[in-house]
Image (cartoon, rainbow, N blue to C red; front, side):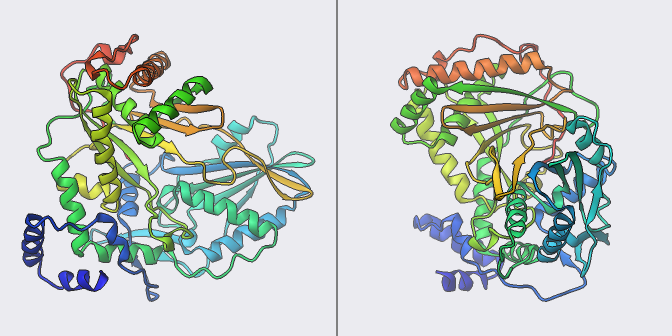
Length: 488
């Protein structure tokens, strides 16, 4: 198939578009995931390299808020047992040598943004002396903005909290990391502490950035662009009109956790099986219906992140691959629940098939001055060694994650969900500039009520789904559609 794609790619843009039109008429379609067939190459060493779409997006957002740490990612762990601080420092030096992105800086030349890989960069390793403060306070004081022109764009903090316990903090900029990278980083730290050989590391993030820039000229990228633009043509006003909107961007946030217990979880699993869905599809669809009911709108857009690592070679590369998919729900209240899910199942699968097209490219295509969506849904898979449990490094040392929230929210509203053995965990992360906790609590109750209605009877009409507690922010909706732009 690749040789056919290469022949098509050799055509001019006009010839490509004409050929694609002819193939469409003949119902000959290329799958979006075929874009993964384009090979990844090791780029030759240069003074500087192009950035990826994700890096470009974060760089621009960071310029606006240079003195804000909203674009920092953090991890915190407790090491229990016999630990060696100098060995910890040595391991991070090995990781910065292994992953070029950890010693990369960013700059602008004539309007173009580039990344520079430094041959050497010293790990910013800080021993925190004041161990009498709460751990949350230690994290808050440790996290600081980065200057993107100065590598490395991460720092490590170590604090002795007991004779046999040390608190370990990683503060790293989003331009060189995402959730999958943090899992990779943590797992490699553990392997190195065990003195395991990680093996040769063939590809670096600059290789991915080059690959992405190359495929932007390929026919399958054009097809993915066509797919997304057709979804949002025409694009009516689909902004959700939250009141009390700020005049300027503000990342202050909070969280509200709740759960769906075992009895209802079992019923959800039965409905998921009956409708031939995934749990992600079920929960996302229920969330869209909840937002629709609360806002009296039937055209809803919800963003959702994808890891962006469908190509096997990307899995062990440290860096930012995450992309945001924008799911559009055109809700017809005359449909039954089963009909609704049949429609969105197909739509969601098609979106995943075309997930390599960068979200910021779509925003540019649509000539938007604001974000396409304000609400985000996240379903956390079970992957990652350190998600919710201790890991023994050796007989004398264990590492466990420290759970905390850094009081920021990049979106107006984000619902995070995850599956546990005996329940479903859910967490709203929300802008405190737009919502107060009581409103979010009511929203969680409404979401659970919608789910209860869905699992009770898949044949009822969407118009029959009722919410029983409306959040004030939604109750007082005015015909105002301009809200602040949130970045991820």
